[in-house]
Image 1 (cartoon, rainbow, N blue to C red):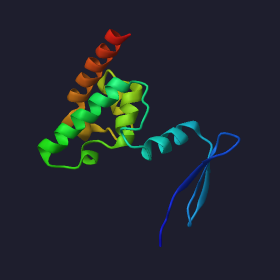
Image 2: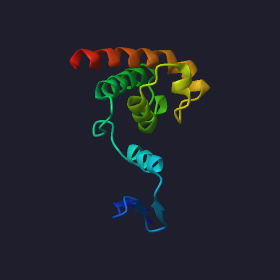
Image 3: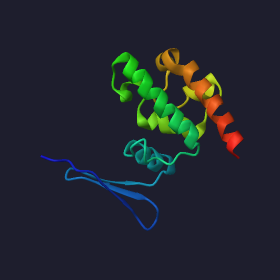
Image 4: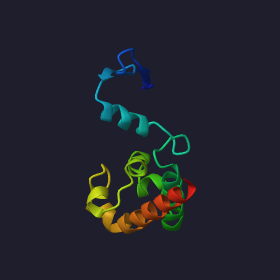
Length: 127
C-alpha cells in the first residue's frame, strides 16, 4: 500500500493534505510553514537569510562526514530552515526552535551561534 501525500492550496489559503488514508485541512499559518519546511529539500528552500542557510548546510555536511552520520541526524531540514529564518543570536533563542533541545545545544549550539553571527555579518557586507 502506498501512502502518497498530496498538498493543495485552497482558495482560503488553507492547505488540504490528503493521502489514500486521510484528509486534513491545515489553517494555522505556523503549521503551514512547518509543513512547507518539512517537505522541501535544503537546496530548494528560500530562507529569509540565504547566506545563513547555505553556511548551515555546508557545516552540517562537514559534521556528518566527520562523524560518519546522515546529515539529518545532525540536524533536520525543518530545524535548519527554522534556524536560517529566525537567525537566533543567543542560547535561549536557539533552544526554543523545535528540534533543538539541551542535548543538541550541548553538541552543536556554540558552532551554530558562531555560524549565525558570521553569516549575518556576510549579509551586512553584501547590502
